[in-house]
Amino acid sequence: MSMHRRRFLTVTATSISGALLSACGANPESARKLLAFAEQKNEGFERGLFRHDTMDRVPTSAKLAGKDFPKYFISKKVPMWDPSVRGAWRLEVSGAVRTPLSLTIDDLMKLPHITQKVDHFCVEGWNARAEWTGVRVSDIARVAGLTANAGYVDFQSFDEDYHESWDMASAMHPLTLVAYGMDGHMLGPAHGAPARVHSPVKLGYKNTKYLTKIVFMPERNGGYWSDQGYEWYGGT
Amino acid sequence: MAELVKRNHWVVRLTHWVNAVAIVIMAGSGMRIFNAHPAFARPGETFVLNPWEGHAIPNWLTFGAWLGGARHWHFAMMWLLVANGLLYLGFLFLHGEWRDIVPRRGDARDAIEMIKFYLFVRRDHPIGGKHNALQKSAYFAMPILGIIIVLSGLAIWKPITLGFITALFVNYKWARFTHFAAMAVLLLLALVHVFMVFAVDPYSLRSMVSGWYNRSKSPEARNARPFYHLFGPARSHSSDAKAPLP
Image: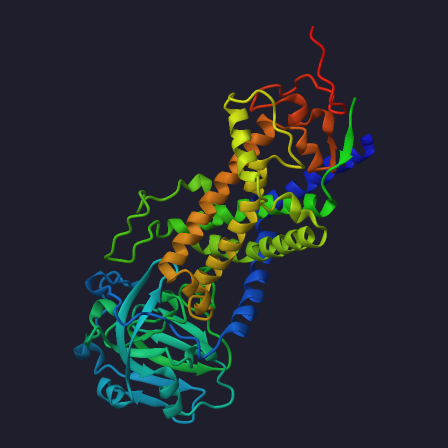
């Protein structure tokens, strides 16, 4: 091997490792761009793969997490809807709809409901099983009547300013519920009472608890955790 | 005398080093993701197969700084790992070099002979092909582990959309455990590999950079065990003649 070639290899190896090192530490801007590009391409790939007929395969005999189901919210204390302060809780459905809705918990429970035993996939890596009772978001959308420009939906809460927006395909999946019951009981304050979004097709942080508003919109609206650097899509 | 042979095709050399970088980033970011919940049990359950259940991996071994950052690295670098792996396996298949790593009858016996040699039970280095029998089994295991890692990775990335892949590993929990355990075995093999390169055959480093390998410095020619005959006298490899008595 000639010295030229050896030098060429040394120089090449040094520049490649240099570029990598700068991508990791010294120059986070180029790394951030690369990762943002990958996230965007991944989202396209994931949305292309997404189907409404892929279901969660939790065996009917599976054990429920029950009292061990993790409890999570961003307020300092468990968020509780106080009717004496805020009036009766209502779920407002608005935005790109023909008929905006304002549903009391009784109105919500009068809509066709289902009960399903599914997984809850947390971004941290754990999964927990529970039996959720609620109304499909697709049924709520049907009642409200979506307009043609409804491409995204934002699920907003009374847990501080917590919200997460979704792509329409994931929201319209038959497993995506506005849940008001858990494990055969009405939803408790630790799990998002009076109603929350629950779906195994998205990671836990996309499943807004303490739900107050469903806003259909033409553009995405970020989200509490998505704005802090977690993937916006967060699909499973 | 230097007995130079072209040992590694440029595709093998390229994919080897890209793989080294991709695996370090994938394992580092993967362990960072794992640290967000360093256990395999579901909430309220126990998991007996992991003796360190609940114990995080030291942060200095991880990559990506935080859960969200590590996920971004993991989901970006996975494409490089997969593309590179497909290029390597495609080349191996089309170029016939799969024969250098796919096990054949007799490999188990040859591997035992290698172990006997390393344990000083046998005096002379068994003569192998491009790789000795132990290397062969390790280099064959690596792509198999890679396939398991990619499949179990898809299983935990898309447990609903690709639920049929998750079902191959029973469920999400077992897919996540498989993903982690296969990574641990692969890292162990990679560490042994790096150790053996420096302790037995540092001359092979050249063949993985420029492609050229000096056969008169091969472990067979040097009769090299870990740290034995590292620079040792090159025996003539070209004839079967026994070395004369001194």
